[in-house]
Amino acid sequence: MTSSQTLQRGLMILRILTRHGAKGMRIHEIEKKSKLNKTTAMRLTKTLVSENFLVHDARNKTYTLGPESYAVGLAAEPRYGLQRLAEPHLRKLSLETGDCVLFSIIHGVEWVCLSIFDGATPIPPQTLKPGDHYPLGAGSAGLAMLAFMSKDEQEKIIALNKPKIQSEFPHANVNEIDQELKDFKGQGYSFIPGSLVQGYWALGVPLLDSKGIPLAAISLVTSEDRLQLSRRLILANRMIQISQEIQNAQIT
Figure 1 (tube, helix red, strand yellow):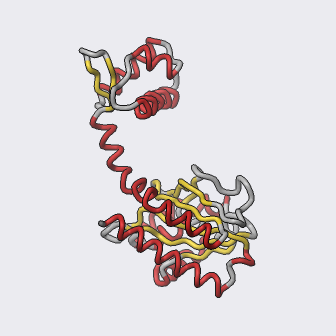
Figure 2: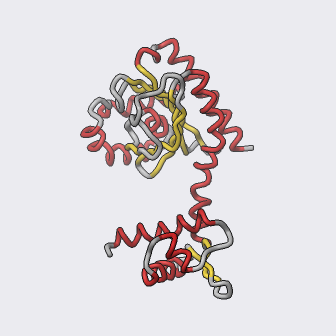
């Protein structure tokens, strides 16, 4: 078994226990659910126990999530809590505008789309979908978040991501990204004409924590003819208003 397979199977056990609930599972239940043989299941659970990702109750012979799993959940909570807070606002925005609205988070030097709300004029199927990830520096969501990072962070991320952006997103204006980021931060939103999907333009607004650090972004994607200047400004102001409402709700 390769190291990647071992990791994948260990994560599968964590996922199974996460979805099972607080009462825990016995080893034979984990075997059945994971379709792993007893030796492999026992070896992986033993490792997860030793690293405090699982706890073994010797009396009940059950395994439950341990303190390290809890710590991982707490670390992720600010972003996923934001997703729950944002959902009704973004659903309403998609209904109001008829356009496609996305919620995305930062993940390392990438951004990941977590949810999409289609309006009356959705983008083509499979163009963007939950779970898709892109380098920070490509797309309105990524640029909106990148614009509100420190200069040092921007420079490091751009240096890492520039080759990928240039090769996979030829319409992205990566050579002028420094000026774009200044402009985007100054106006409070990003605007991208078709860098990810040709013929479709996008606006992005970051969601910040109490210290002004970007955690996530809301973005709106629609056809070029629906994002001309006058409507673009109206939508950008509405999105900034929504982001402030979400941030205020997070603080309270």
